[in-house]
Length: 249
Image (cartoon, rainbow, N blue to C red; front, side):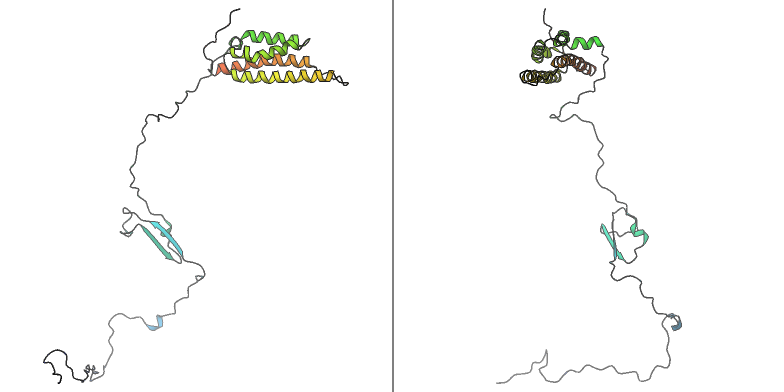
């Protein structure tokens, strides 16, 4: 057996292929010719060292670019960042940003169904003294004034009248009924506490006079005055409702 050498393709011989070595020119060059303008060696100086502190970070400026910006801006991309030790002054100027959002003109429409309608402002109405007295229910005013005089002699009648006032007289006034009822109850509680303290003091050895008769007169007349003032405040703001039915005497 044996191996036959092929007629084509790679040779199986052990001879190494040697690349040709370029040969030097036979004659050395006789002169030197420059290919362009040159700088004299005397004018070349060493470059100045940078005065920047290497511990300080570089200042980075970011600006937004839009397609309709100036022509000297890059055409692709929407964000540009430049890092330099001392950025130019123009880098601090922001680019003009164009908004593509549509401009919507506000239009007036009906309010949502769950919203409460706005109450129009009530103008201040002229009110006379007669209107205030009639709105404060004259029988109540007369009873309170009389109770003030009677209270100087006996406090039982004024206190009994103050007990009936929040439930019998106050509901018949024109406006500010709730506020007048609260004030009348406060006056009643003060009078009752004063009467209890007077009885306790009279039964002891101290026999201290609290002058309850004067406090009863002040409470009765003060409640009548407060009723008139509340009617004046409510009537001038237009809070008067329908006239309540008046009792027949």
